[in-house]
Length: 311
Image 1: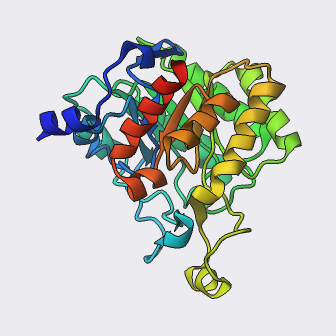
Image 2: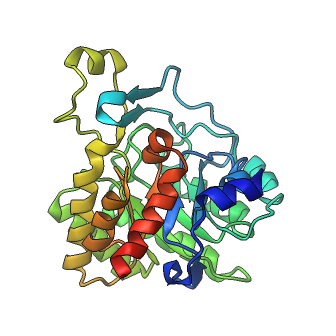
């Protein structure tokens, strides 16, 4: 079955290869975090043509997440609203699953804090995740931008983010192999906050940024106010976040003079959407909601669109 899927969805062309932060990606299309939360599906998902897969978000121990229902499709908007709350089975189970790796695809580990942790415990949460996953993933993503995990104020603070990233860098330096560290940011940041992101990356010398997470902005949705009121809180992903995330990518790339790699994610439903991100300054792209709506054929379409732009 895996051989059949690979033949259907993979595009094998050396022109798609990309080297970033010491890793060689077979192609620039990845699966974003949130789909394979417990690292239980990545071996099978690797047959869908991806160049890399990001597992998680992982927390130190099992976390049930927010009460159900917590995931809603907005079909008219090609969007999803979720307030999952980092539901996962914990870092130990993720590690046991990662030990069963039988694919050479690049695997990223997206790590977060426990919802119940107090602000003085946040860094320890990330430390635990980082240490446990370190031998088994190829890069790390520090998730400080999910709107569904309680208080976000401290996570958005520049000084805190620097302290957190420096703590993880210190652990990283003591391991047998240093792994790339990226910061995942929200699409709702203003220009001042984006300037701070650039300052954080340059000061800590981390490896890059993922732009962006889900948005709390609900302007311009086709869904009715009644529908949205019934759904309640949650982050919006999919087509409605497309322009916002592209704008963030372009701002970071231009303002920093492309000083660091950017992985672009948010509202990619076609090859053209992916090219828009790449032309704005993204080095790699990730899909999530588009994968749910369009299926694995989207990966192939994006890779073919990238190749067509090279011709």
